[in-house]
Amino acid sequence: MQRQAVRHMRRALAAPAARTAVSIPVHAARCYSLHAPNAKMNLPIDYSTTPLLAQTSEAALRSSELPADIRNGATKKLNMFQAINDAMGLALAEDESVVIFGEDVAFGGVFRCTMKLAETYGADRVFNTPLTEQGIAGFGIGLAAEGMRPVAEIQFADYVYPAFDQIVNEAAKLRYRDGSNGRSAGGLTIRMPCGGVGHGALYHSQSPESLFTHVPGLRVIMPRSPAQAKGLLLAAIRSNDPCIFMEPKILYRAAVEQVPVGAYELPLSKAEILKEGKDVTVISYGQPLYNCMEAIKHLERDLGGVSVELIDLRTVHPWDKETVFESVKKTGRVIVVHESYVTAGIGAEVAAAIQENPDTFNRLEAPVRRVAGWNVHNPLIFEKVHLPDVTRIYDAMKKSLKY
Image (cartoon, rainbow, N blue to C red; front, side, top):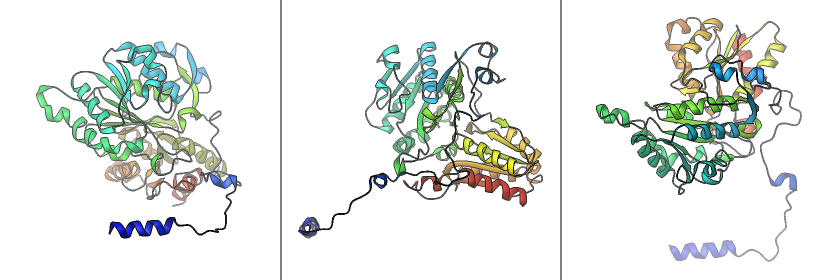
């Protein structure tokens, strides 16, 4: 069999003497997913004007979730990776039990989230690991069990799967298994960039958050902005539950806003109403919130008198049912939007919970709709078709209103 395989290989490699050359145009050599040239709704998000980002210091300090000293303090303009870096720097400075590690984090990491932390806090607290996701997670669990607060980085969420056994069978279960002995992996935070960027294809575009939401004992968090990322990450590091902190990598540099100076926490497992409305509730988290806001703007302009409520879950497990249910009881119509696959995603859980609750089920005026990634692997040149866009969200809201 081996000799036969070698002969077939040699024949395949024996190219004809003359073969017609095919020239590939330069513009077609990199077939990335782009916006349609004549698009009316699916245009690039203008992050410099969106109301979801604090464009002024006043807007950044307006939140009632911030402590008084922070609300009375200063802000600085940061993008998301800088805000994450700021949060980790503050955590390292205030707590000697915090350590940060992962592949290439000592020089700043692929996305520069850990830049200059090793120089500032030393190689014994910020350091590189071998290329082994299961080793990174297992090492973090061991540190957490001994009272440390490790912040482990998985370079891309797409590569977390070798660590899945460690996270699910060890980190999530350790407190339950150890019982009254008191050990747990509660100090562990695992960070990972996730989501589409337009050219990530199969192995640099995934959003696997729903895989972790099926596991008791884990918190799963995804921020939408620099200020949110800073406050939620500090809360995750300080919390006594193992946290999966998923960072939409398209926002690392795109999302820029005024971020409060100093250390502050934002509440975990607490949703935030970003825009109030009376006719439809749209629930999302992470980057799709920006598409939701654009779709809402178009819908409210086209259908005068209609107003839409927009909710950011922020923590997708355990998620804030109270805020969602109160909104549903007010509007009677619900759209859930996320990048990850539609089947068994966050939208399925939210829809099921709304249907199971008599107060929200009896108030529904239309079926709960999900706008999510299709049940196919993320295609390189068709990513814009695969992920939720403004038009799909707009159509879902319109159909719900007409039901």
